[in-house]
Amino acid sequence: MSLLSGISKESVIGTAVLGCVFAAGLWAGSRQSSSHTGFQGAKNTVLGSNNVLLQYMLENSLREHPSLKKIRLKTVEHPYHFMMVACEQAQLMANLAKLIKTKKALEVGVYTGYNTLNMALLLPDDGKVVACDVNEEYANIGKPIWKEAGVEHKIDLRIKEAVQTLDELLAAGEAETFDFAFIDADKESYDHYYEKCLKLIRKGGIIAIDNVLLGGRVLNRTNDICGQVLHDLNQKILRDHRVNMSMLAVGDGLTLVFKL
Image (tube, rainbow, N blue to C red; front, side, top):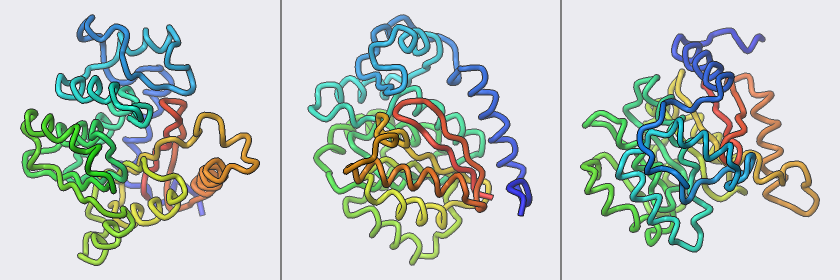
């Protein structure tokens, strides 16, 4: 069976746009303000966070909402700041989510809520982000900023094991009702998250999977459970005839999955 059979119009458009984005080396936008220079909290394991080319790219492409910048700068002060999604990656996901007219989004892994806010900002007023995490303490860093940004009502934060939340959504009849999903949580469970998100996402919807390069650990997997898990998932998605996919060297590696 050809991977191109049965592709929805939205998947074709999304894949084509993604190709243009990757080829051009742009992540949606021109420079908005010189105040971004330095980009505290910038994360890119491919180019390196101190790489001058990365800094140039951010200065000339990132359009960061003031509330997103506020969460980013607060997160930089946190001991685990390296867990935050790369801002240029979040912007790319937001643009793709807009492209497919996302109304319902799913987030597996919240941390301080940078990407939760990123998604909520693009949704219509009656849209919803179901945000899954087990640590409310970290999410509390972003909560006040969600409220300040006027999008708190769009965010359904569920503090429990993500697999449990995903199973509850499926049991409630919400299969194929979500437009966009982002997976960025414990690596050992990535395959479970992928399979459940694939059931929850509609045809033409997108699943974005973070950390697929895992700082290069996918290359040297000896005695590295997480590196092996990510490698196995990368191999699985490459051969998965249920989807189209692209793996990008952005952030810590980002795979975009388009459900057929």
